[in-house]
Amino acid sequence: MTKATKTQTLQNTIHNIKNNKLTNNTQRVGLRLLAAAGEWIPRSQLTRIPSATARVRDLRKEQFGSFQVECRSSDDLKKKTAKRTFYYRISATRVTKKQLDKLFPTI
Image 1: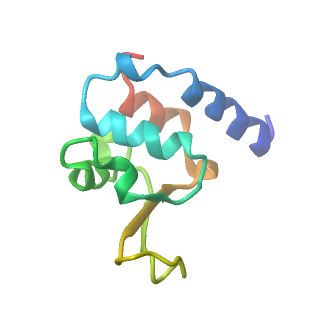
Image 2: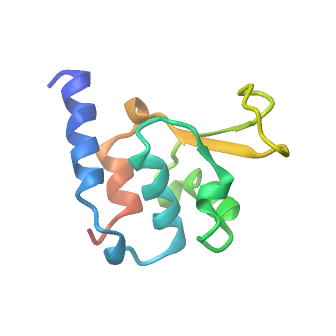
């Protein structure tokens, strides 16, 4: 299987996960970042999830899949915002099936 095919298969898996099947906020944040397919997501899009930034940190932990979550400020990304905000992303090409299985064990 080529890397592009593998990435597409994982993206299909991510898009088939239903939000109402998620059991915790780390899964909700993870799904939001993974569904973005490598695009930068502003913190404001995660605010409906309690303690969203703490859940982003959880995604980096081994028990949730050890995802490589990137964080940049609006200044770093040269985005014009009224106030400085932070953006997050998970590169779609770095995600493995094993990581998805750890984050979404019952799905």
